[in-house]
Length: 172
Image 1 (cartoon, rainbow, N blue to C red):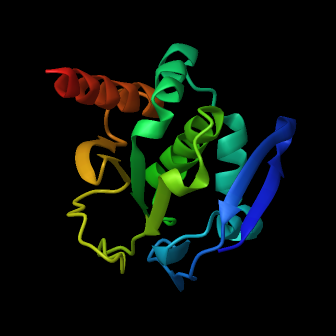
Image 2 (tube, one colour):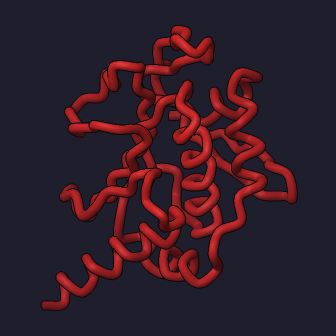
């Protein structure tokens, strides 16, 4: 794998790992669909995904919740299942990446899979996704929670709650 770093507005550095390409098609709403494992440099460098770059730069996470995620950054991984054609995914995915970047999380801590309109991802396992986007939080290979965009919480708040619950359970 090859490591690539991208400089975002405000001097924010985003490193990305190069992965196998996803397949591309067009959704019924005319937006570009990536299906399969998504490379962040694809989202950063393809003008069809300008929403990703601008969304990462615009999102301002809650500092307290972000600090809790940061304090636990080595204790979890995230699988993001999104639709590049889906408006909710277009809002939530950049927010997730901004949180992960500011928490100092390594690139290997997040995997992103694009889904088509039938919610098919070509992922190596079935994540049982019923609605997009969904961010599945894992600890030591076990799912400890899911974040859906229809929640009233921010990404960092929902993640902090999942981590807090898992930490409490671990201490029992």
